[in-house]
Image 1 (tube, rainbow, N blue to C red):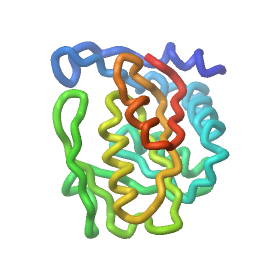
Image 2 (spheres, rainbow, N blue to C red):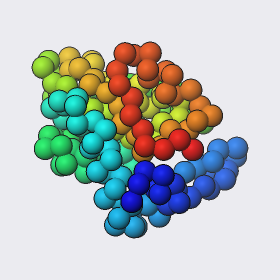
Image 3 (tube, one colour):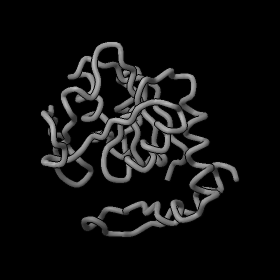
Image 4 (cartoon, one colour):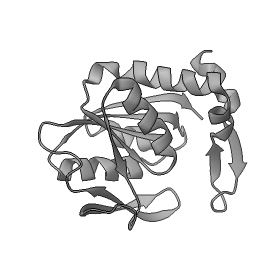
Length: 175
């Protein structure tokens, strides 16, 4: 299976979660073992030169890709979550979404100086979530090695926003 073959497993859901937003449903891709494996393999191949010490991902769909990618790369996994979900001391960051505002948190001891972190999520839209994740990682003293996404929304400016950070930005498909 090739990267372009994955497109058939992405379902568009109009007006979800709010009016005017087209939600990219990846559950058909997750259901298909070949598509799922191909996605993980292609992501791992794309970021293999980064020499990361851990993968950080934002809940919930980012955990799917972040966890499998961390395993595939042989590095640790760092969850970045919404408030009240992490049991230890946290650092938090408020940020703008495509359709509102949100807050993310990370454990204070999740990373530190000398760590090189790959930030992973399913969709790159405005880049706000990924930027907030990067800010959290940087707050801990770690370096952001780059970003990796399954999908890039071509109508949004997230790629440009993250590219300005001087880090590599990888994605498999533009929708």
